[in-house]
Length: 182
Image (tube, rainbow, N blue to C red; front, side, top):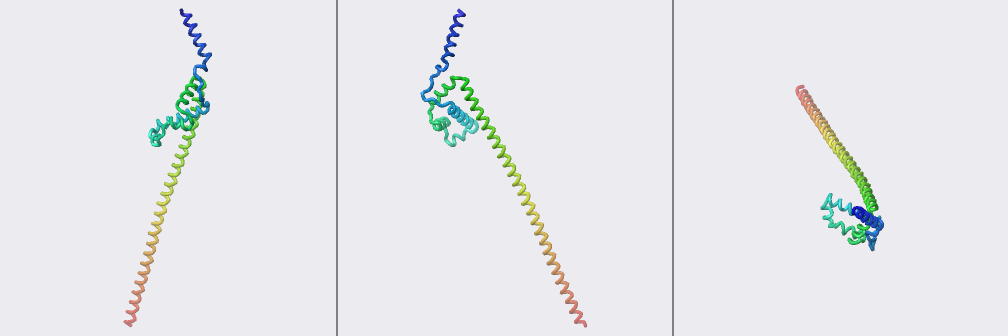
């Protein structure tokens, strides 16, 4: 009895492996493997956007699936049939996902680099603004000091002139008094 079960299992197993490609029928409208990878990549991106910032897709009224179907000129049935077809060959399907993961990793690195570069630019701009602010403050303090010095000089010149005029007037008065007394 045990041997019959094993034999039956081996027969079924050999039939499955011998007609592995026939388990899933080739779709009438097959999508090229590279195009299917592109579709799945875009779906992964849209799904990530949906998870990270759900309101972003809603604000633009974007339905991920509809967007993909319009972009690649396919319909949901065609996509589903092709997805099943490619998934039937586990090794190839795994390779497709490895390509998608590789692309996502490359894009992640480039986005992180852009973010880092933008942060550096923002920091540099902030430092330049701070330096400019400090320079403006120093210039305004310098100008106030110069204005104050100029005012003091002007005041001292006025005082000196007033004093000179006053002394001249006093000396004239004295001279007139002397002349009157003589």
